Length: 125
Image 1 (tube, rainbow, N blue to C red):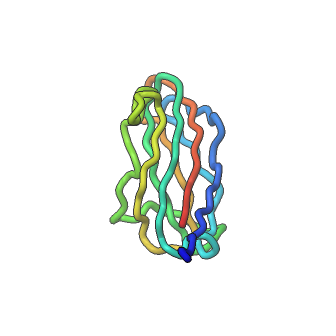
Image 2: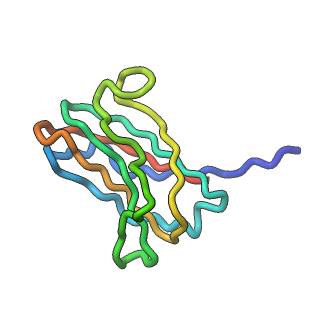
């Protein structure tokens, strides 16, 4: 019999409006409880005329300082409403964060002229 490894999904944003050059940061996610295999992905859906990037910040405590590690890369960047395999602003992207007990996802509008709306889910195994 094949053992199934559970996947935990967190809905971080639901049509979150992000102004030109603005950003939104998720609540802290406790990875100690949800990441036994260290496998991560985000699923996003964007609408509007802006451009967005997704990145993660890590922290050693839930309420302390969160930082983007110096070895981190953006999860995804230059995302617009026609990004993704269906050219519909939707995709799933995997990433491998450094070891830490807590994570926040940061969404930043990088086009500087237009707003964008973002729905975002974090999948962890």
